[in-house]
Image (cartoon, rainbow, N blue to C red; front, top):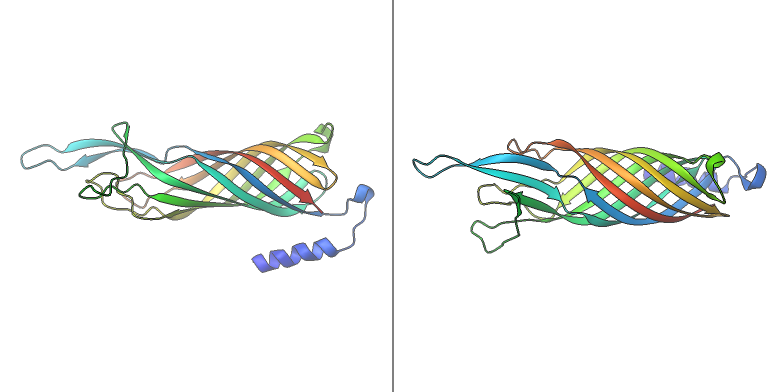
Length: 230
């Protein structure tokens, strides 16, 4: 699929163009981007620890989060005219899981018995999206845009997650479908493109653990990017 996409883009790039102001039926677009990922919680629930002989079970109030992280990436696609862009983007970040017990954050403790593990995770977000930038709203080469997309949110956990001695070690590595909705502003000057945007991502987190509830979770990602259109 990737080879087919590269071949198609190359064929479109070398094909003859026509139209006013250098606009043909398309232009090839590439850009680099940097920003942040600000996460909503992954799960909040109450667990129970079995009490000693003759003692009642003890409740644990737990919350799991992903730590906010810096993110870097790129996008590539086709400008199908002055107003519309079809693109594929990839955003990567390094974060770590967070756990809170009764409102207090749990720290990684390899010396504990059993060991308390709060692992780092690698994140990758791939999106196929359609951007609409109405030229009639642009002023001085700067105009607003909106974008919607669909893709995949990949979380790769580096070691098992065990926030309390009562929890079994778990690996929450997973790939889930994600949707994107974005608003931003873009500046154009000749072949250069630059922009700032606020991206929102929504995906279903499924821990595959019957003691931890899954939920639809969210992230907000402010992004700055710089690109070219050929």
